[in-house]
Image (cartoon, rainbow over all chains, first blue to last red; front, side):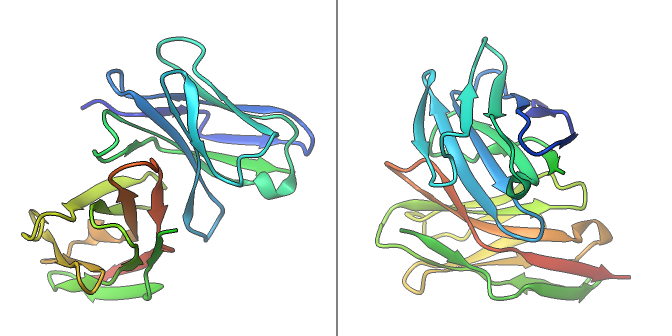
Length: 113
Length: 115
């Protein structure tokens, strides 16, 4: 069964450093997303991406964040200068159409120290 | 803006028994989708069941079924014959049919299954 794959599973970084979280969405999917979940809290939308551009972003997704689909398979989330409050589980998701369910990856746990 | 409320932070059920998890939402839209996602300790988000708002028939998926009350904006999940592997966080989520592409999640309900 096709699945969304995220690497790494856990990333520890120092405050102020740049991190790149990587995702390989399901191959025929067209819409890509990043969500985050701070420990013990609900899952929050960050950004959606379609046709090689951002289609929607939340207030959380400020200038420190960026997304890219550098090739036909990877979808990355970059945080330029990490803050302690960026520590969270980051989920990548994809779907074929807007009206179908999103398939989530297993998440990357980001710890900023 | 749409909101999703799960009023039960924690629930427990005996193995083989039935449990119902509550979810209410607020929207002014008439067409939308609702989902229940399961998040086991591995933290991966797994789709459990989906409901289209225009369908009156409640969705079912094996031991999982929903009670969708559109007028009341209620979307509860019933798990029958609970199994130990059902223990997880359960998130209710809302997706608008047009325009916004994001899922709006509730805060989740932690389900414990007792042997």
